[in-house]
Length: 196
Image 1 (cartoon, rainbow, N blue to C red):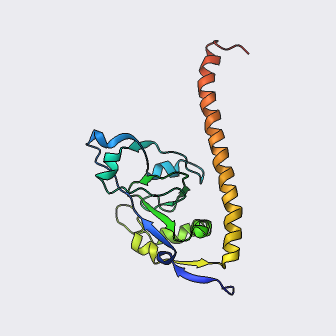
Image 2 (image 1 turned 180 degrees about the horizontal axis):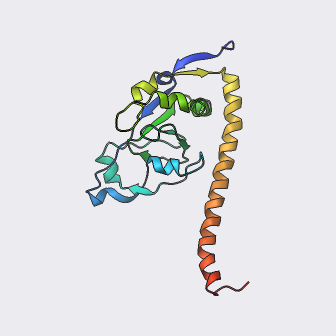
Image 3 (image 1 turned 90 degrees about the horizontal axis):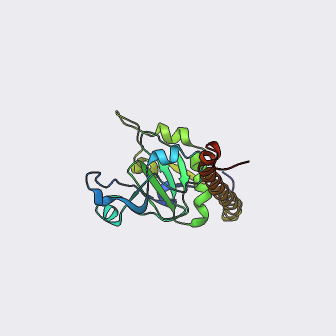
């Protein structure tokens, strides 16, 4: 390792939080305004920036289940079945139990940790066990090593990558707005309501 760099356990550099699912038999838990992310929201997103989820839960659903809110910029990593897909969100959200959500103890480590983990998907998947579907446990994940660069390099990397992530988010929002506009206009164009 270069001088000044450190080898640590993931448990030493960040908190790892799981998720949960409110009972689907209780209607009061669903269709609220809390973003509740499942692995397919991430695997179908096609982008590191995740802006929304397919389903929402209510405050009661959050309170009466094992789902936990995580802050904006938490690293979301799928940990069950489809292991090793990543996303970043710009708002507080909660996830189901198919995730390990990583909150670095030092915010400047977020991008270093994220891209370190993204480069090690095969290793993460090799640590996933299970007879029905592969799953990496929080305990096993926390014991994985991670190399931490010196602070100056970490800060420089974080600054550059944060700007890129913000650009990706802006482009993703614009793409969604254009898609919505197309979906509104195309039927009107096809049935002759709009002339070209």
